[in-house]
Image (cartoon, rainbow, N blue to C red; front, side):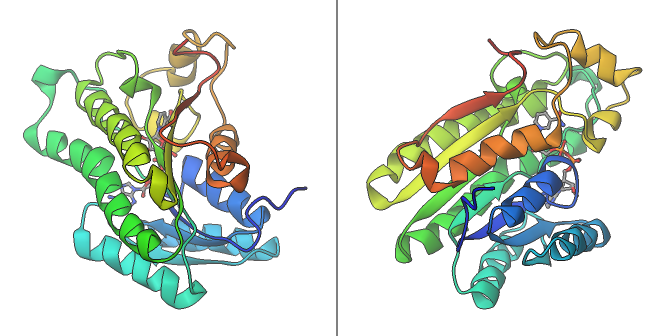
Length: 250
Ligand SMILES: NC(=O)c1ccc[n+]([C@@H]2O[C@H](COP(=O)([O-])OP(=O)(O)OC[C@H]3O[C@@H](n4cnc5c(N)ncnc54)[C@H](O)[C@@H]3O)[C@@H](O)[C@H]2O)c1
């Protein structure tokens, strides 16, 4: 197995569940010292345990990515423990219920936009601040196929993900000459707790029928895209929006 992240230190947000959990386990397997960052301490600590049992190095850090001070502390704790930060996978997200615009409460609007747009911005802000002073790095955001094509009724989630896609491209170009690569993955529908929380009956078949490959994605398949973008194998890649979706947006 290639240790494509050997010697590197990686932060993964939303790493207590789903895609982030799979990414934390994969990044650690590929040699990264890994920070499992999430709101959910119990599940996050369980992911750390899985990594350690497999011989990897990881610790949990509790963070709400919508809170500036907490994101700053995440970077500081990473550097304090591991001495550096090379890769960040800003993956935490929140879909909310599958409600139409007229049925969405203002509080839901605020939460969906904060977690999916402000959060990645805050993470990038403090990651980039560190990376600019310390030899660069690689950042990957998790956006969504819903940020590329219309998937009713997810208007606010889709708009927040579209904003993150555009922010990724601009960030990629802004820091291209300063050693920081910024890319994003756009998962198709992936079988994680998030889709089962949407309140859609028979949710797996509901989404699978629109996928050219005829099935949902696995968290590991998305994690592999993020791994490659974080690794030096992608050293000439920045500002890229990579769908990992069984052909859905094509
Ligand atoms: N599952 C899908 O079909 C799908 C499709 C496209 C995009 N995505 C995106 O992929 C990412 C991961 O989704 P998933 O399906 O693995 O979801 P998930 O619900 O399984 O995991 C999300 C994790 O993020 C954490 N989180 C939520 N809000 C947070 C906050 N404010 N601060 C820190 N952590 C927070 C949660 O505690 C949870 O552990 C999200 O950005 C999601 O929008 C998922």
